[in-house]
Image (tube, rainbow, N blue to C red; front, side, top):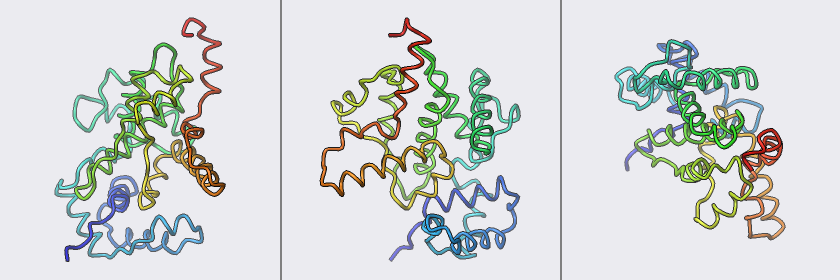
Length: 257
């Protein structure tokens, strides 16, 4: 029987610790990090790190990262301006520099974390297409960018398919941040929100905005299921309910109505 591939979150965490936490040549320190999380008193943390991991597996994936055999390794590095600006695959284009800086400001100010190159790229790309008819808020951009970056990370793992981001595509294409009709459009098109398997919940630590709203959406869905409700259309947009933003921004930009 073939061995089960290391789950995408563990692969990402090993590379994150190597690139951003000074553990590049310290497999024992990485192992102790995982063991510490597995022994955490926080139930959710223990669930995120429930799968066993050995020194041999850690060393195997560290070697793969050093040999360039793992996809998107460099994009997992924390973004630094202007070091990571440029035309390369693992850089943010200069024409998106303002959005990249907005991304850094948003995450460092509101979440006390520095975004990765990959997340900054997705945030900047989202920012460049969400200026009209009214500007999308930084928080909304973060929700979209985090979903796209999560899909990139999972899709870079040979054992997994990239999760569908058609919902995000439709949201951006229809300029849904300036409208209140998106839930009906999504249902009509048969496009559903991103569904994250429990094994990937560790990624939510790298998705602070989406993680907060996704968990809130889950709680409401679970409550409805407990009450015997099967029609979830009423909560379809719970994870991205920014109606307060649309209402206030339309007052500022009345021509967009």
